[in-house]
Length: 240
Image 1 (cartoon, rainbow, N blue to C red):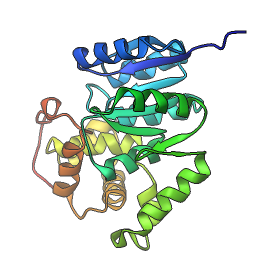
Image 2: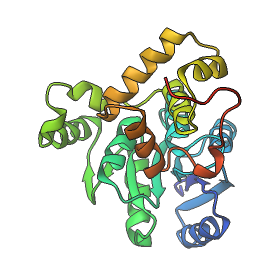
Image 3: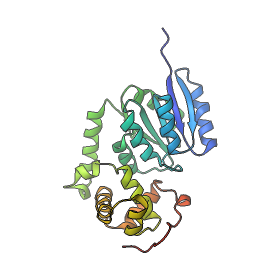
């Protein structure tokens, strides 16, 4: 009996790259691209409708960024493996993506053979980290703990560093990048002033930063918030 192909959804907002990726994958008899989408919301909806085996996920996309989409997809469909495929060559970003639920992380100049091997590995329940294949979640957690253990700035708060931002914290972070005050953040999201402050404290702790500016810089540098989408919020914009 012939094995079923690995069904893949591509989430990529640059059509030229997405089309090239599709052409590469179509050469493999055990891989099948079932959909291509161009934003995070469509990725979430596509997974819900099609239940692919593997998602190739960009980070810097419209509507919902790739990390938020990954987190929502894994919460609803843990059996779907996500490979982050991004322009951001940043080891801390990679670690954050793994904690969000991704099974592998690659920069877009990855060699086709390496990506194809990773697709097969994550479909089998493995993880791929810096070119190393890890057998399962236990090995991944050991790798993450060792990674954080080598970085003294995370001492005493490893659990916070291992915890990804929630979807609501991502919403707050996007408004921070847009220059919104706590009052405007609360009004925009329908939450209290104290809840905004609680989210801010959690964001700063998880990102190991001290203020809004540092948090905003990380969000933009890693592609979590698209500058072209980050216009000024309505109403008051001074910082609190």
